[in-house]
Length: 278
Length: 278
Image (tube, rainbow over all chains, first blue to last red; front, side):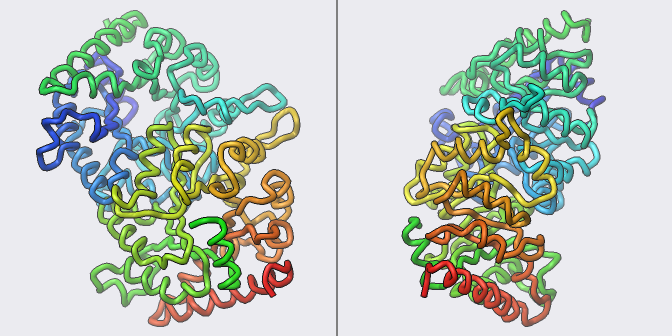
């Protein structure tokens, strides 16, 4: 999906919601467990209940990989069930030396090889340029590079500071910016520190940011928009638990839809406030 | 595998060789391509030809994952073919927030879940403590954390320097050291800069180091040993291309064995020189 198409989706759906598919067999409704493929059945129902309200889906690869080959089959079926007008994110946090990153790119971008072709993949930057650039060689595909995450451990290394007062996460953005463009690079920026976005936007004013941490992880949508939104919106805000586990009963999909509507309405207001839609 | 068992293996086999299983369908002998499962057949032959000469095997997960679910089946069969007296390394460079790293740990450590139980997994440290510690909760399993890698991009962030002249890779070792012990933590240190090991050993004198980059990537085994070996050896030196692609003919396994013998002989000399074996 191109940047232009993504922005159009945001305007049409009046939403910049990303729904996380971190589907945990211990958390899905019990009545699904008797069926043949409970995780896929759950995902499909969640997707059908939310696809007009969100612009992106983000399966968390670990939640599939933990079942080995069988989990990768479920992931592949889930990918097939994603509507083509939604931006798909393989949340995989991959990154290795060049020839290996190329193989990871193949895993997530080349349908002919792996049976899947996500629009994007999340990337860990520790190994530097040759670990990131192989993902940028695919047309209309995106690398979403970890910059400032929202977990507790994010402070351990991301805030490491050099003699010029520049933090590692800023150095990451500055360098990675030179390897790609606003058309194939995004950054992961956690929502738990609204003012952190001010600094991020100094380094990446025009890039899209993938923002986890709104809702269950404690981030505020309003703060994220106040400090992080740009003229094209520039945000994909993820919610997982608040939506997909809104109910553990027969009404799980219905309740997921209700929660997605709440977020979509909030996002619509922010888009209007910013003059991005009428 | 425990540290004690690993050290015993090194002494018994007079070797600290790790064989990388970065098995690329475009590089394996043509005569295998007609068979049912060429990658697995290749791996099995390589393992049988080298298992008395090496102490570890390291499948590079990307080379399997690029085929989706089918690749994960090949990985699982390969894991089953690994001799139990060899240390197994899932070279996966994973790392995510706590609940997600836990799922990745399940993928590589819990046979009941994924069909595989490697002794260790390589980890990217960017997301900090909660991304690493879930891998340390498994008995006799190891996290092998990226410190100073040997690829070109390693300089981009790993050498980032703070006000005290401490580099990021040093900060990573110092902090990660406090999360585990020499019994469940190793570090990845590239072999292309022998003297880099001096600095590494200041921060991690007793830890085992996984060392890629000897051979095709240009590192020297002698230099690695001169600067990096400790009283328990403390090194697992990986070779991939030099061994597994020694020949693309019918004699590929035989030639792989010959190359492994050369390295084992060099390693034996180093172990004798250091007084670790007689």
